[in-house]
Amino acid sequence: MGDLWCTNRQELGKKGEDAALEYLLQRGMKLLARNWRKGHRELDLVMEDGNFIRVVEVKSRNVPSMADPLENMTAAKRKNVIAAARGFLGENRGLSGGKEVVFDVVSILFNGESFKIEYIQDAFAPAW
Picture 1 (tube, rainbow, N blue to C red):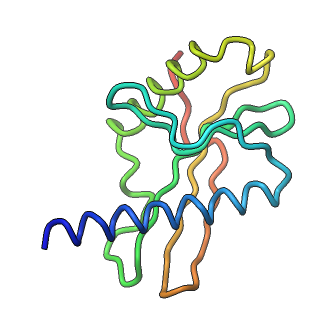
Picture 2 (picture 1 turned 90 degrees about the horizontal axis):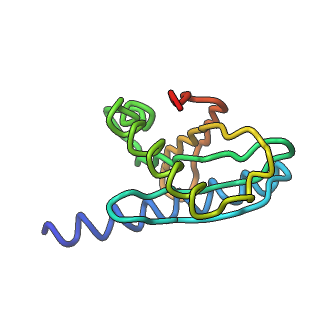
C-alpha cells in the first residue's frame, strides 16, 4: 500500500509540475531548468521572466484536502529551496546575467482532471 501511495504522490507531483510549467510558459516565461538536483536538494522549476530568474516551488494536492498546498512551505522547506538555488546559480554562473532572483510558489488543487492554480510571485525572500 505504501508503494501505491508514493506512486500516486509522485504522479500528482508530476501532473502539478506539468500544469504549472504550461501556465508559466503561457505567461511568456522561458524554462531554464526542471527538477534540478544536487544531493538531497531540488528545484522544481527555474524560469526566466524578463529581468527576473524565478525559482518556482510547485505544491499540488487533491480535493478534498484538509491543508492548502501552500501550508507545506515551511521555514525548513524555504531554507532548502534557497540553498538549492544557491547551488544552481553557482553551477550556472552567468545565467542570471545580473537579473534578480526571486522565489515564487505555484499551488495546484486538483479535482479529478480539473484544477485550480494559484500563482504567488515573490512568495518568500532569501537572506543572501
